[in-house]
Amino acid sequence: MSEHGSERVVAASSAIVAGAAGRVLIAPWGQVRSANGDFVLDAEAGRMVLEAFEAHGTDVPVDYEHQSLGGTYAAPSGLAPAAGWIKALHVVEPQDDAADGGSLEPGLYADVEWTEAARAKLEAREYRYLSPVVIVRKRDRRVVALHSAALTNKPAIVGMRPIVNKTSDERTEERMHEQTVTNAAEPEGLDKRPPQAVDDAVEALRLRLGLDSSSDGETVILAAERRLTELMTEASRREAEERVTAATRAGKLIPVQREWAMALALRDPTGFDEWAATAPVVVSLGRTQPPEAAEPSRQRATIVASARAAFRAEPGLALITDEEAWVRTALRDAGLKEED
Image (cartoon, rainbow, N blue to C red; front, side, top):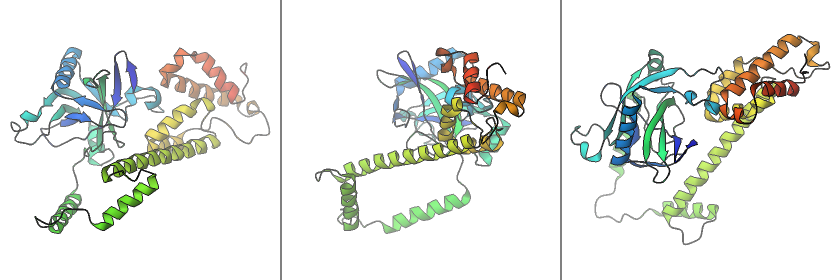
């Protein structure tokens, strides 16, 4: 997310729900929990979003993995193809649910015109979630505008539903699970206290988390959820570092690309693996002779092209240096002399 005066941009994922042709859920109603920052969608926020959309006067893009944001979200190719275009926005308030026959839950909806490529990816289940980028007012966390949206497989909004409809097998399994739960429910009037096994599990969690003995079950569960999130984040970072280290050892990354590579490996591990599989070797490893002794022109041209791409993919670099200085640094890091 990035600051914009009294507002900031928040990337947060939500799921598409069934509705009119091309109509998808952008964000649910009320207080929305997101890994990238919570925000509020209510009547006032909905009005501001619709007014901003009308004032902008153009379709809002839906891309892949937020690539149109650039910077750490940029694709290795520098391209940001559209997956679709938002042609209109709609707000469904809680009191409007009955008017829609109960088919749409309250929230912000968009009418999306998908590209053929995006439709194919959705049908093949290559992408399952829609992730909006919303502009949030700092003082009360209300959404004031929709910047863009993206297809992604790593949603940020807590409790979202997938964009792609369940398969018949998944629906059957879900119904069987619901039937099992119904059949196992206790008859009315019986004691509803958790069984001893659940009490014991909660107590074990409390001890492992080092919580006070007065902590109730809800406190323990919330603390366990936070710790699990931390562990998953740590694991994702370790895996990303392993990917970047492997690419560096293979000579496919130069030092100035490490930050970009880490961001891509964290956000889209599969995309990083696809890039690493096809990326050229830009740093020859294990040489006993200087790099310029073997195909210096080709070596230099590859590093220059890679450095320019990295500089242009991160607009913030222009605030601290210029492109030529960035290229010279990349050449020195690769062991090439500037005058070559």
